[in-house]
Image (cartoon, rainbow, N blue to C red; front, side):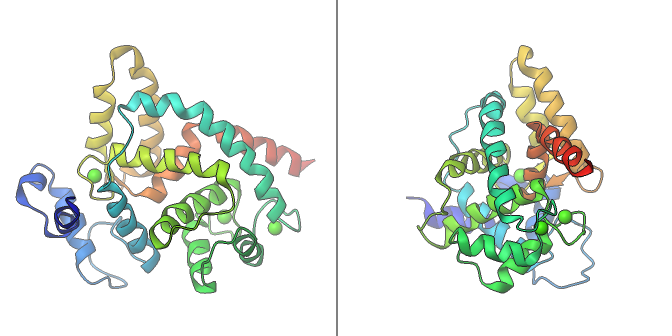
Length: 257
Ligand SMILES: [Ca+2]
Ligand SMILES: [Ca+2]
Ligand SMILES: [Ca+2]
């Protein structure tokens, strides 16, 4: 029952755990400070929206509960299962792409949330749409859709015990959350490059090649900017790791027919 200690820990930043990583201190400090638009913070990964701050807070609280992952290799071994499960998600995506345009527009996402009994307000749905429409085309493609559902899964667990209406996928989402928690050793809500390298180095030599592939995927995501990956960025990286790109290619081929 260390609840008090862990929640205090994420805000008061005891020196012992942060001195080795100055970046994480700055990140956490930025989170505690009032969030202002157009801030001068050098940390681009500090939350800039209310939703982003909420995701970070929820993730940190989830992290205080620990992870069932034992090693980086445990995560990699789960890839095929995750892959299969997310591919099934494609049917859900297609169901809610009512006009078969290949992406989900704001109105379709609204229907989707109502249908899946996700109790977000209209404003929250709008926020998560904007947050996950990474390529700014006012539509949610399959990968963006998966990220939305997984973020909803994380946030929903925090607000109540009621479940999303898609039990099969929830196991997969839990694995993705659990993987992030495993990698984020200092539990500040971000996976740093050091944490990623550390996890890979802990694996035995025979498994390192797959670790390196994952690392390369990660580098594509964000490291160029600040070396920090938040949960949303992690999810986008994850959809790449497990090979969902192939599913996407198939989709594009079908559209081009
Ligand atoms: Ca559509
Ligand atoms: Ca989009
Ligand atoms: Ca971290």
